[in-house]
Image 1 (cartoon, rainbow over the protein chains, first blue to last red):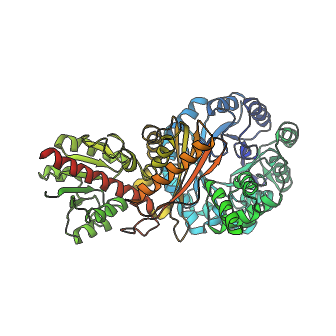
Image 2 (cartoon, chains in turn orange, brown):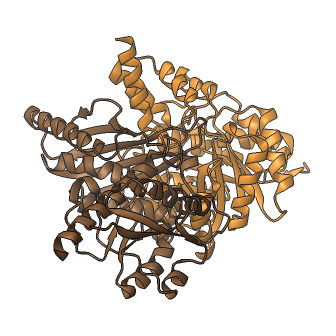
Length: 339
Length: 294
């Protein structure tokens, strides 16, 4: 059949998926997943701690492996795809990026909250100097209106990003909003700057949102094997590929190898099934950063409060990505209010 | 004893807040405000307050033969590298509020007296001034193998200098957690939050302790409370959000910093803790200089 659209898929199993396994993937896990992914035809493979380079911490959870070992394991297991890393300015630094390049990464995705693009200038410019594929990643895009998103995306493009993403970190967006925001970026940015979309499945619409994004001009789409990712997970790669086949989108990914990789390689390594349970659903409903899920469950248990009350309160306070320390503080407050 | 004559380089959020605080000092007189943007709000206010203002930068002022006793640098890490050289050559005391870290670190609550003879001192970062005292409060009781701090500030309180210096912020703060805080390894994270109304500066401090006996925890707790009271003597809006939480060998401390509202409103406690620390050092320096000259 003739395709209407051609896109590039970035797989995030080895980065966003890390949130769902508390950053505990071993070097062996990384090798197995990276090599299975490389056989599917995905264009890019993102690997890092869930919170990006330098993310291993008390705040976000210590990774099982050293960053050097983890990234080298991924890079050495891949022949076709380009391995990229995530970097959140304020957590990771240019120094971390330079090390990651030594380990073999060929691209960097620089992520900021969707109103704070100007803190990415240093890192995007340095990424370009290092000859990397550079992406600007506007997190929690559901909190920010179209005009402001366009303004922030333009900044990232000016610093030198090859692509800018609308990132639905909270899995809180529905298709209309995705269409409005992706199409606004597409028409505002120069042709040579690609637009991307990153979904979370907290409201059950990650595949639909990703297809809507493609129809509005997004060229890069994120997905992960079996949907492994924070919250209710990301767009499941194999489901997305099958759906794209049926609606004329060329993903460059082969369906059966993607299904097999999800089923045989990733699912046996999951700590818990990727489902829209009440906690994950509350994230999407309240508009809260998806990686808060396991931290919130832990804090709720520690203080004997309902995890949904904690998440809704975090949403009310407009807490942004990275503020995991607020989870304990809010759970503590709710427990003391109830006492 | 006449007041020391001070110049402030950098007319942004920090420089302007600093000027307002110095106007209340019994030891320092802010006399010059040096910026690069003649239209900046900071320079306008400085002029209104009777300071001599210049938009020509530090080099031009020094070339004109002006010799302040002390210069506060509130520009950026990159600019301070140049300024540090100029000030050293001119023999002028430099108090650096950027994370350039040319001189030794001063955390007002911990090592205020230590570097009074150093011609250039570095005030670390706002996150450092807010959190290193707490790390020190823990490490003076028990060994700390690792300390990590998360500083969350409102987007509105982070000017272009802070935004261009994010890496320098995390790197300088991490080093200060080790060298001044006393942790064997340090890590710093900074988050900007754009919520409206703006949030107060909020910091979480995590310390991994070598011992966890109950009497050690009691002493750590008492030490933290004592430190909070000490910081409150120069930043009254510095307080614990909740009691410290002990879990295994980890203690987690959450603090909030409400500013005095001198320049930006009270949410910008990150400005206050930095400028208050710089003023405190400058006053100690002035007293020290007076004592030496007598």
